[in-house]
Image (spheres, rainbow over the protein chains, first blue to last red):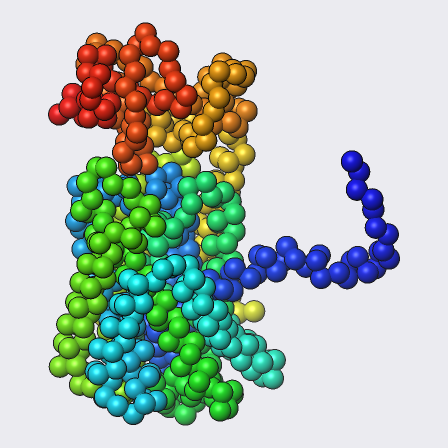
Length: 417
Length: 147
């Protein structure tokens, strides 16, 4: 039966919000994934980069985000062709993958627990080590007792949208000071030799913060098998745009607020000072946004660690469905193991760095370097598996090897610098 | 604009953006070209044929079942694959690998019903076993032969 057509003025139809709907559907997920993908390592490292070097290291943020997006594309191809980590489990190097991934994950986990603890304790004015133990316990129980993982996820993701204020503030700043745009472009893309002492390690830290490997594995274990890859690639592309935008925004705000005064970001107060334009709202907004995004990251890491252990332990008759994995006793075991390991790592950090709030950014930087040291291992696996998929293309494979090679080279050069 | 900046922008485009766009192009092309015969002779390809989880009424045969694998791909319908072999077939290592690959698809243990070669197949049966080992589940027997 033919539906009766409603006659409206053509202009009204054109102006209707529904015409914008496809656009909103595209932009929304990109923005959300960029906000929820942030965690304390990103915020800390990008703020540091902006405050210490101005706009000069923005190129490393852009390149690392693009490389991660490329590896994400390959990961989604592998995930669609072979679910979960079953592809890797068959390899005899699975233990290498698992241990490299675990090390990077524990480093990210520790960074996030330390981050939340220092941020919360600077508000509560107690020693952050106590808060760290408290946070670990809370996150552990949240993670394993969550009846519905997606519900908690949704709530936390909504809270992380507050971090979108970095983008908003940057846009306002650029609108008021349009002359600095050319400066940013020039300093981001001009190829000049860099002479500072610790710059190599800082570039490694940017790569570690931007390309944390748990995100890749999470993508692989949660992607539905019947997903249309073109759709997935579109969302990865949009995710890249927004991730670059929000990362550059963090760096930009640090570069315009801290860099001219010669302040290099150290503690949580400096991270909040970057949002100074928000006035009294800066502190609560930062605390809620950063805590939510860090908890989100911690839960994702616990899930990935569980999955890696599950794949290692499971017998042939087990299913690797994510719901089954979450309900299995291994989830409790792997989460406890991860949290305890990161508490041990945290104690080492206290011995090395002391328990002063002002070491927050230093801790995050060094942990990001550790993350990047192992971040290339999942990359190698993904590229290797990509070669066996239906979507194999020689050029892409060569580019992929080059990119993984660059990741390894960044490590070597950064440490030798 | 300064030539140096253009060089930097160009490098970013080549290193960062171009691989993403090219990858999208490849996937888009291979997606559009479903009839591609590339790799179809590979054993591992069995792993990639989607199988519908919904039971299909096999008593009412429709043309798509007679079209074979290529026809099913053309019609974009998931083919039902039933592998029926006898012991002799299973001695061939290539076939054995194919069987194991098929049964281990998704890396989940499949509920495989053992069927004999001369027995009519039942609804949704995806089974395989040498006719002599009727009591074992098919995957066990296939793996046992492999071992």
